Image 1 (cartoon, helix red, strand yellow):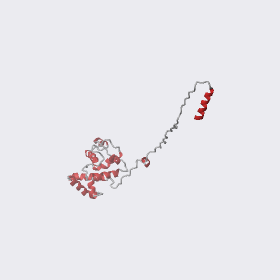
Image 2 (tube, one colour):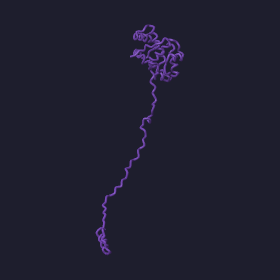
Image 3 (cartoon, helix red, strand yellow):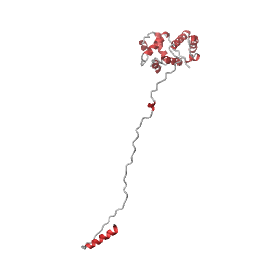
Image 4 (cartoon, helix red, strand yellow):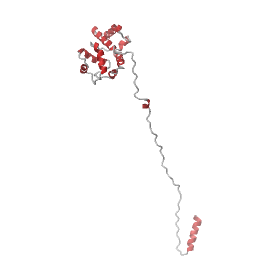
Amino acid sequence: MALSNAYTEAYGKLGEFFNKLRDGQAPPQFTHQFLIDLGFKSNKQRAYIPLLKALGFLTPDGKPTARYKDYRDHSQSKRIMGEALKEAYADIFLIKENPTSADHATVEGKFKSYHNASDNVALNMRRTFFALLDLADLKGKPTPKKASESAEDHALPHVEPAPPVTAPQVHIKTPGLHYNIQIHLPATKDIEVYNAIFKSLKEHLF
C-alpha cells in the first residue's frame, strides 16, 4: 500500500497555505520562490513542496497536476484533499477508516514502525496528517462530470442524399439494308425503250 513520509514542522500553517493555493492560480512550476511569494518564507515551510508532491498536487519535477487545479474549485476542494490523503496515507485508513483525535497514538505508532522514525519525527508526521485531515472530506462523492457532448453531438452527421444517376440515353438505329441499283440505259432515241425499262422497274421493285 502506501504511507507518505512527508511532513512539516510548520503544520499549523497548512490550512492557510492550502487556502492560498485554492484562491490563487496554479504556477507553471512550483518553486521555492513561488512559495515565498505566497508569503511562506520560513525554512520549515519549505517542506510544503515535497508534501504537495506526496499528495499528488505536484509532479516530481514540481509542475502542478490536475489534482492541484481541481482543488482550486471551492466546491470540490475538501473532496479532492480526501482523495489525496487516501492515496498518500492508504495504510492509515486500513487501520481506521475515519481517524479521529482518539487515534493519535495509533497513527503515530504506525508512522514510527513503518518508517523506522524517531519519536519526534513520527510526532510531526502524525501532526501533519491530522492537519491535512482537517481540510478533507473523506466521505465526499466525486462531483459528476458534465457531459461534454450532448446526444446530438454523437449523432451521425446529416448527409444529403446523392441525386440519382441517370444513364445516358443511347438511340440505337435498327439496322437495315440499302440497295444501290445502277441502270445503264442503252443509247437510243426511241423513247418507248426507256418507257418500257422504267415500267419494268416499277413492277418488279416497288
